[in-house]
Image (cartoon, rainbow, N blue to C red; front, side, top):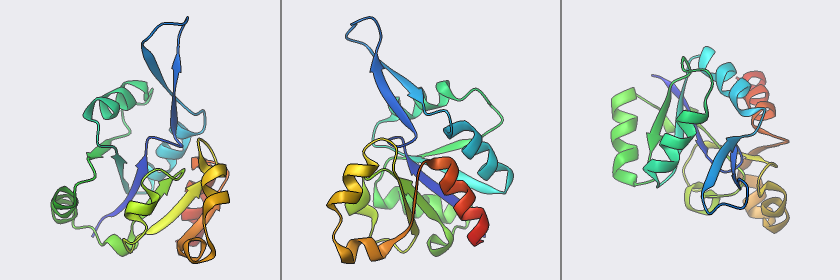
Length: 154
């Protein structure tokens, strides 16, 4: 069985406007690429969770290291089942890294959820009640700290 890291674009990248234009550009947080490299080299399947295929394509274009392969999952349950079957994943051995986006939707899955404080992570943390906090596997400063946490606990 393979092991996987699911992560949302939020908390690993951000959008900004360039020169007051209406076009929004995507930029990765500085720690994102080293974290993805770290996890990829340790044999994790990397899966970006976003309902927008365009966001996935923009994310891929921001990756400077084209040897790091990132899969796409649109958030649909039937597509998750197909991904699990294709890659022989055990969801209980998988991790979900997020700043809070999709947290409520996917917290019930039996994977390990790591909250990162980049993006909206700090405000998400402030809003969680104790039962929700108990379901969080770890809280990390950013995705690189989350990658280290995964390596240490495995």
